[in-house]
Image (cartoon, rainbow, N blue to C red):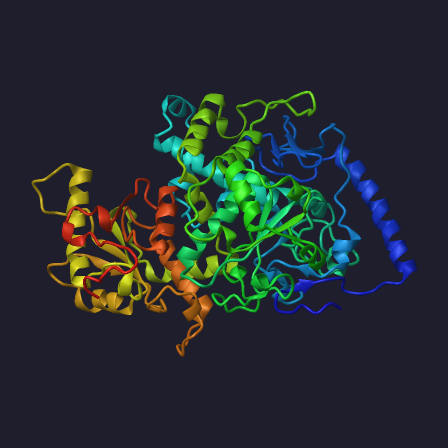
Length: 632
C-alpha cells in the first residue's frame, strides 16, 4: 500500500495480477455501458426544482464543452442530462490508469482520519454539492451550497439576497441591490473556474458510490470501488482531460493579510486564461519554492488546507508537476501587456508561477474582468445551433434578464478594485473543522440577548504594527472613540439630536494585543461613564503580532494553527455588528473590510468606517512604513 506521508500523497493501494485487472476492467466496462443506458432514460438524482436550468463549465476554447441540463416537468423535480457540444449523451467519466497509479498531490480528506464506520465532516455529498451547484439557482437551495463556503453569516445580505425583478430593473449600477448581485455572481464565477472541471467526474461518482459509506447515495457496492482500491480521497478529482492549471505557493514571509493580497495576481492570471489555480506548499517535488516548508501552518500537511478548503478539487500527479513549465518574467510581462500568455504556453497543461507576480499587485486587468463576465454570461447563454438545451433563455437563475446583467457587467468592468473583495473572500473559505471550531467559540461568547443592531464592532491592530507601520493610540482613546461613534450613529439612524440615549450597548472587540483586550476587560467593564459591555474571545491566543514566520517561533502553549484559528474567529466576530470601526493600515483589517463590502454583516445595513475617516482628527491614525508611532 502507498504510504500516506505528510502531504497525504496517494497512489494505488495494491498491485493486481493481469488476470484480475483484466477481469475488473471488463466488469467496469460492462457496468459503465449499463449505467450509460440508465443515464439516458432515468433521473440521476433527485433535487429541488432550480431556477437555473443548466450548469456549464465555462472555459473558453479548450476541448468539448459539456452541458449539464436540468429538464423540468410536472412529474419530476429535476432530471439531469449530460450533453456535449454536438448534443450526444456522454458516457460516465473514467479516471485514467496513469492518474490512479501515480503519486497524487492530494487535497485534505478528513474522512480518512475517522474510524472505519464513521463518516467524517468531509463527505462525498458535501464535495458533490460544491462541484454541481456553481450556476445561479434559487436562494432556498441550489447555489447556497457554494455561497455557504464564505464567512458570511446565514442572515447576512450576501446570503439572503432575493431577486426583486421590478426593483432591479429600476436600479442603476451603483445601487446596493445590483452591487450585491454582482458580488454573488462574481463569487460563483470564480468558483466555477475552480470546480467546474470536476463536474463530469462528480456525476460519475454519484453512480459509483463508495462502499465505506462516505457517499450519501442509496447504493452499496459489494466490493471496494476503483476509488477505494486506489486510495482516492473524497476531495481528490482528476478533472476533465483538457483542464489546464496554474500552480503557485502562498508566502509565509509576511503577515497573512499581506500574503493574501500578494497572492491575488495569481487569481487574476488564472481567471484571465481559464486555468485552474492550485496552491502548493511543503511539497517534496518540484522547484524549491514549492518544496519549502510553509511556516504559517502546523498540521501534518503544513499548508493552507490546515485551516481552509482546497482551492479546487482537481489534483495533480507527481508526473504532472515534474512536466510543468515555469512562468518567467518575460511571460508575465507579455500577459500584462496583452492580457494573454505567450502562444508557446497555450498548450502547457501545468504552469508554475513563483513570486514574479508578487508585491502590491494592482487592480484587476481588463482581461481578468472579462474572464469573470465570460463565465457569468455562460450561466445565461441562449440556445444556439451547436447546443440543444431545454427551453433556456436569458431569464434563468435568479430571474435576471439582459438589462440587469448589463448593470452587473458595468459594476465589474468599471470598478478596477471590485474583484479584490471577491478574491479575498474566496481565499477565506474555512474548512469544515475550522468552521466547527469558530461556531463553538461564538456560541460560547455571545450572550443570549445579543442584538447586531445595538452593537459596534471594534477591531484594533496594535502590537508589532505600532513599531513603524502605523500610528497607534492607547485604549482610553478607543473608549472615547466608541462614545463619540455611538452618538454619531444613533443620530444618523434616528435623526433625533435632542436625546442623549444611545441605540448601542455592546462592543464586539477583537485584537491580537493582550494589552488592548486586558485594558477593555479590566479597566472599562462596568464603568459608569462607559455604558457598553464587551464581547471578547477570552481564548484568543493574543500573539501580539501578524508575522507568520514568528507563529511557530515561540515558547507559548499555542502553535501556528491556533493563531490562525484565533485570527479567523476575530474576522467572524467582526461580521456580527451593525456598525464597524477598522484600521485601514492593516491588511488583516482589509480582509474584514472586503467581507463587509460584499454584504457579509449580520446586520442588513452595516455601516463601516476606518480610523482615517473618523470625524475626530485625534483618532485618524496615519499609516506607512517608517512612520513614527504616536503612542503604544
